[in-house]
Structures are given as C-alpha cells and as structure tokens.
Length: 150
Image (tube, rainbow, N blue to C red; front, top):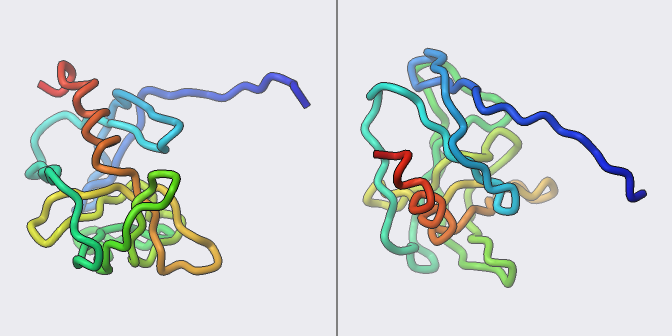
C-alpha cells in the first residue's frame, strides 16, 4: 500500500562445513535481483571449486550437493544428479535436479567438477526442477569483488 518497510541486514553470519564445524563468515556482496551473495570464510579448509568457462550442453549430466529440508549430518551430504535443460526467457538456467527449500545456494557442477550454476529456486508443485543463477551473473559478481578476493 505504498508504505515503506524495513529489513535487517547482517554482514556477519556462519556456515557449517562438511564435518559439521561452524565457521564465521562475512557477507562480502549481495545481489538481491539474482538471489546471490558472496561470503568469505577465513582460513583454508577446502579446495576451491573452479567456475566453468562455459555452460554444459543441453542434456549434459550435472551434479548438485545440497541439504534440502535441512537434511545433513557431519560427513554426509546429499548428492543429486540431473541434466541441463536450458535457459528460459528470463535468463534462468533450468536443471532436472531435485530441489526443495534448503537447496538454495548450493552449487551445480559439471562432470569436470566445475561450478556451472547456483540453485536459487525450486518449483513447489514439481520438485524435480531446479532454477539456477547463470555463469555470467556469478562471474560478474566475482569480477566486481576481485579486489576483496585476493
């Protein structure tokens, strides 16, 4: 109704690693339009996942590691596979990967272990489709923050 609203923005948060350790993280950048954020977690506790230079071909197999509905135990992460379906008219990439709340923010990898997308949405009536942020948007965010990532 034209009324202004307020929201709280926090620059500090935490992440849970594969072994169940909670690590502090700093939010470096937020892209609300594309539902994407960049977080920095101090220290080296895992190898970085490379970002692919190109999208998979339509029908190419892809993989996802996520915690849909919060399903996670230290040392265990659910891993899914599916196919790259293509891009819609709004620029979202579609994958035939099961996704539910809790899948958002999880990576989609190609067969070389390179990231090709990050899940931002699932369809509630047909949960075998995941919508992801495009490589162009991910690379743009990384480039805009290149000074912070050194």
